[in-house]
Length: 127
Image 1 (spheres, one colour):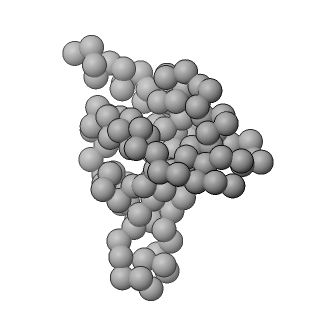
Image 2: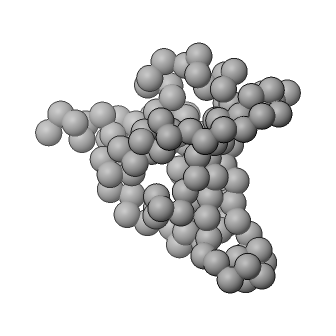
């Protein structure tokens, strides 16, 4: 697999975070990579910095959003934005380095919840 920085993804995420007022997300501690050659089925992934690593290295939590070029780059703009919203939903409110699972305490990260946030995102540009 090959990785490269993805400044276009950073720009998209910053726009999404601002429009949805996701103040809990510190975009300075997010990194964005585009990968090539993945054998998995994912379109994108989020990677966390577990607490044990944070403590050992004396740093705060950081996250990496990886987009799989072969799949992500073929999507239309709206599906790309929905994919990024989905990945951002995995970041917990405390920005602690953990990840929110797809189904946690009755809250789900699924097509319906992503579509709801996406609609809020689109509405933010109409007002």
